[in-house]
Image 1 (cartoon, rainbow over the protein chains, first blue to last red):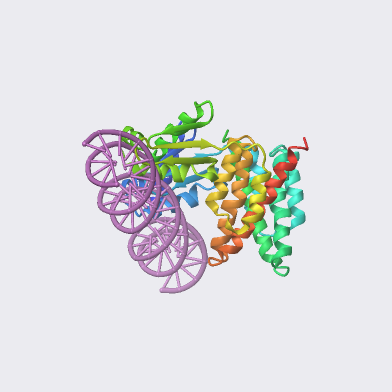
Image 2 (image 1 turned 135 degrees about the horizontal axis):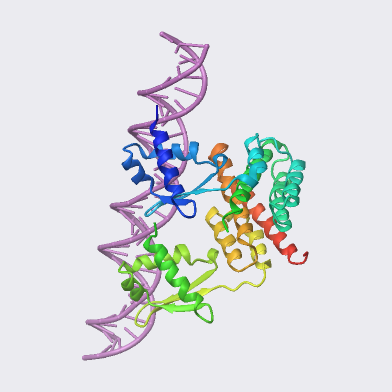
Length: 163
Length: 163
DNA sequence: CTCGGTTTTGACCTTTACTGACATTATTAT
DNA sequence: ATAATAATGTCAGTAAAGGTCAAAACCGAG
């Protein structure tokens, strides 16, 4: 049958489809009320159904007059990046970073400036930390590097249509 | 969707933009009246939206014929910012990063795309790490964050010469 | 029936916005 | 001088969002 989850997903998809710019702004609380469920249920729907892998981006703000914004990304041209993200990103070594970033630049996903910025964050900056703080623990640096790479790639995904 | 805060910010920004010297003088009370809110609300807007990290300076005077002056800081070189970072290494908070980066974008030192990339590395990515690894030790995250910021800024500086 | 995955909920947390009482400072009239 | 008046500043408290996480409930395949 149809789960609550599915209904909420359908409802939101319909809203997005009938929106001119493929983006909607909702209030978590109000949707939860409409479907008579826990507010956190909405978060569940968002993380399982409206994530990047399914072609959506979610932005939000807390506090008074907070909101949740759902944006649909046209994913066609970005397939390679997405499929790369889907694979485990946790095993990225320093040497890999250069390769990936250069590839992005070659393919025209990012500019040369952007490529240099990305390398500054993932290579130079992390090397500084490495040598000044903990010579030993390379594994943590790997983790941080992967996280940065992943988030930057996601950002590249978004940028293609965000202006 | 739009908070009072946002409206006041927009209003003031518009005023500043249409001012020849990028500075305006207002009266707290009058603005509060116009927006029908508590005067202290204006102070809230000033501290959250018009602080140094966002590229503004606020001066004021109390008493009879008191005023509030908002000045947009012109930056023509990045060196001061970088050298500030050298000193304040571990004191850079997440919100500060966002402020600085937005400021740089506004001033045209970096593009909006570049700003988003930088924030992805310094905010989103590091937050992921923080929550998944060591909830306690924020100090190390601060260190990494400022190292990344510094290296990225230096990169921006260099790029002014290259290409 | 049982096991593994998916949904759903609820308790608790963090962030943001906003207000009001009270404090401080400057000007002006007496 | 002094008191009245007219500004802004501060801070703590409240309200109004959304976020997180673990545990319970559900559900389908074997």
